[in-house]
Length: 102
Image (cartoon, rainbow, N blue to C red; front, side, top):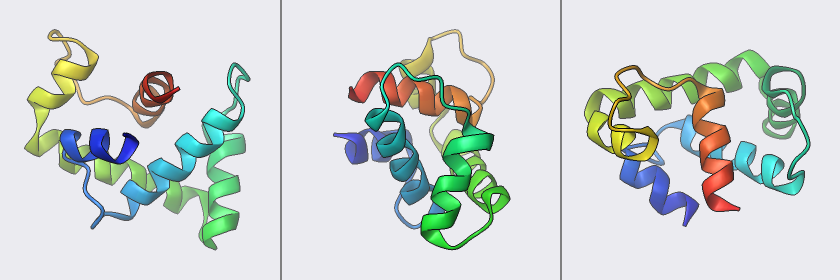
């Protein structure tokens, strides 16, 4: 379901961010209700698993979101709100996807 949702948003597996978003959602779903800080806890954990820097994790997720937003803004608007005029941040997208996929 999560993969289908990302594909529907236009976030495709050819971006590293696709796989990193899946990793982040896995971590967020393993700790439901716990206030996990993305830049302090989630990104470093993914970076360690993937042998990359946490800055690269964040950048790749942002890039995937930006590219998908430029191709499929209507999908984001349908998911977030018909009034969503701005591209969602990584934390906004991850929080919403974690809530939807629980």
